[in-house]
Image (tube, rainbow, N blue to C red; front, top):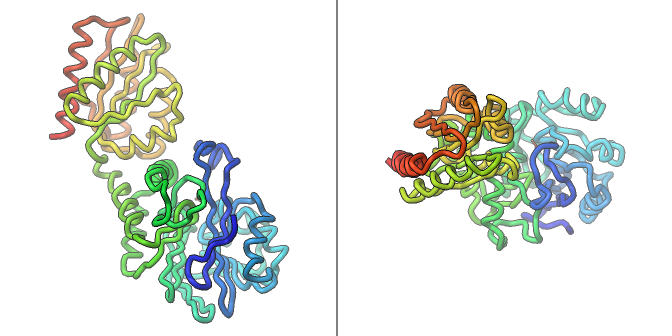
Length: 398
Ligand code: FEO
């Protein structure tokens, strides 16, 4: 993809990744792809803000060469050291050895650890300013958004915020790089939430701190290092990130994530009855079959919705493993403050219920109902479960 002018003298020169199956080796992006947005600033001194994964390197360097020869690059700014933004650093250092690497104090050791580079690395303090000519860059440290060394870069003349992981999302760019020219807007919002839930939600308190810290800035463009660039309404993505971060304490909005698994269809039949009851209460239910849907997608719903239903049979005196795997991930990601219920079938002894209740205790979820039934359950069980669904939905609305 050719470079794109973001503002006079500022160019997007990113890489669109359509070939990586798992972002961070964990999160599926086979269908969605992802972009590594890198920004070239051309002035009396030239700087590049964030790099890219080591992929399509020829294309990446050619984009840069459209505007400057590599030997005239003065600064390489590393807002964040994760290799999706620094993978081409070693080759860029070889091709542009004169360019000074600017990074936070915590990043300096990482530059050495990841790439064996210790010369020509200059640490920038929180709030430090660098003069490029007409353009002036200011660095703000925003630890844990997404690693401890992370910072953002703000250009004062054009009021562009280069925010790296913050305000980013999955989804390779499909021609349009700005939100106001993008026909697939809903796709990018959905993928921003999934990215948020997978990557930064655990550090929501730090995201809120960062938003607060950056709030005095007048921002005309939010230019993250993944996904769309926000120029018509830059506040939109900041407010979405604020709202999603606040779910860490509030538990989310009215709605239910129904997460289930079933061995022979008995639990699934009851789950259907429960979903019917919840829908009758006027509350939206997002159903996920944990045997088939990757936890990445389930986490996004879990993060957003206040209500959780776990439907899973007992398996070897414990919880059905595909469902247990999702709850384990929810625990690692601090998906807290939910209102929950459990239902599931057992053959000769229970056990799943005990395990779900243990997860709920550790997650701080309020377990309203736990309903275990023997084998296929009875007609009365089904009616009872449908009624429980109505009551659960009503309790969320209330
Ligand atoms: Fe996009 Fe935390 O790297």
